[in-house]
Length: 429
Image 1 (cartoon, rainbow, N blue to C red):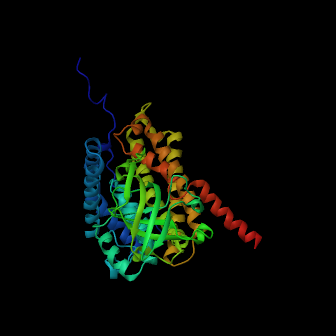
Image 2 (image 1 turned 30 degrees about the horizontal axis):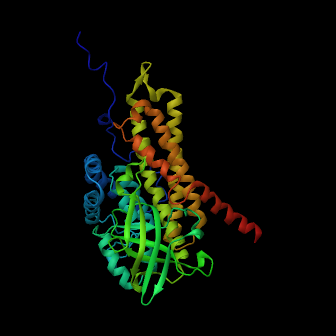
Image 3 (image 1 turned 180 degrees about the vertical axis):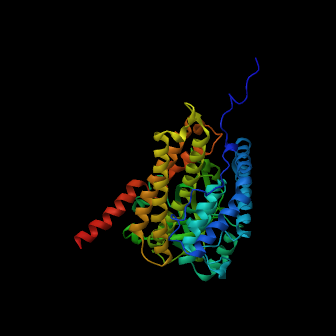
């Protein structure tokens, strides 16, 4: 008997033909200015035209490198993919939103960076995380606290995609409780000598430079005796102890554990005021959290769009599953969560762009968006069923990435602590 191919045909990703971003309504962007809405369309068109067609091949290349290479060779090859990606973005003006024209940026601002984050993340290129790490985590502090020489040394090559960076805070015994930081920097003559360890350093294996935090005054509370430094990864005494493979697709970025043994750096490596590192760190985290949220929303939007179209094509019990209330209501809830999450993120981005303090608001945004993104992607997985659990669709990768958001850049619990602390501080006067 000849099998009828139509009877045994499964829905594939090729059947998902709606253009990326179709779910974003005018209502969702009602608060955007005309310029912001124009940037959204520009970034989306660029991502669909230049990034999406490259994404699958980039993932395959990364997997091949991970399977065949190790150590320095692996990092060199992955670094090459990341730099190629960043150069492509730089040529299109997609790397300079946070930085003034003086240093090679375009000065569009925090909201513009969030819009670009969403559109690029939705296209799914594996290099997009290193873009966010380099331009936000490892660099925004140089813009705000660096000397003119530090800015001119590091900002232009990072905006151009020639220099990669990472942020080094977490240690084996230190996560959210930075008051227990053990890494030390001691002044010896005209040099700073750093000793310690940093763990879970996202992009650390690919970075050219780290923005590193260490205790410089042990005679006071660590938050008053912490300083920040710009440290080259190829400096003597900097050694990658091991790579920390993760369950997410970003593990190609070499999340690493790093030892610092008698790492002597010149005095101009100090970033910001001596013993003012805690303020530098807190300032960076607010921007990191809001841009991280918008990037995560890009992935959640992609999950919603794939699930919604899949539901119109997948037939069970003689009708598309989208006709079943259990599925259609789930899609409605996903859309509502995406809509609300975008509005709260936009609000906080506007506050930061205006130069306002937004520690409580960034914590609210991070908490709300992390939970919304997790629910959206989990629901998308449920709509696709077994197909969503396979690598044939991007849902499984988005699912793993979404789970990280409830840990990275401050866990859900830490966000709740920050929010409650500020509320109770007002009550107590």
